[in-house]
Length: 306
Image (cartoon, one colour):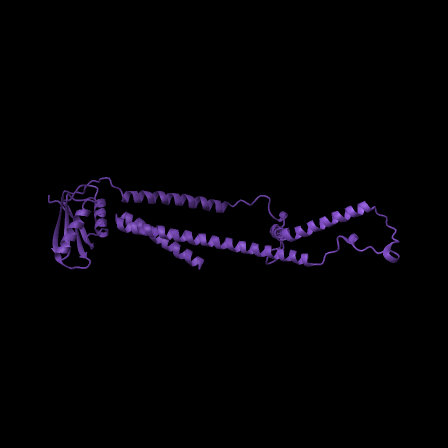
């Protein structure tokens, strides 16, 4: 599922980027904005998928580490449950050789016996209190410290690589380095050419006008929700007045004529350059006014009469 998401996101990202460049080249700004928003959305989707994958791997590693810590803790608790030897056997009952134990040959100073018994009792109390209060936390910390030293969950399979089996200096990878250099140079060259082509296509500087009397653009107007001729006339006039200013040069001699129902012809005098004509076509195809859309039917230039 993750690879399917990567594939779908990569294809969507490439398609949005391609259409963004195409719409910028055609001066269709509304469509370029939509393609740009879609590009950002797909990028956010891919970043989210990558982050969720990383978080999932981190959670799995933490779960594995906790399971190993719990296993080591259970082993420590199992060893604690084993019966321990009597650490204070000398405090037990002393049996003498004769009746009443009075014939023991051990000689103890009474003061030392009382002091030793008192200190041993205090030590026993401290030991029990420490065992009841500090053992769970200490065992937890000890299990965490011993977790890196435990064997892997799946066990060790196959012989481990020895240090002497590895070369001291890695072998030079000439082909890989050469391929990386060629790919980098090609990527830089394509980037420079793409930026130059896009800058030439979206330039705003004035160009020399062609040797023609006028430029003509024929387009069809459709208004959503109505088919009345006055609504189409108003939408066509509004759309034309908005798009005639999208060229890099002023067009004081521009006129709009109705050819038939919904079909209009725009005439610009003097004639527009090829780049300005592309900008005008892009504006008419992309812009909307009063729920109206325009479809370019054709364009051309009127030759001067010599």
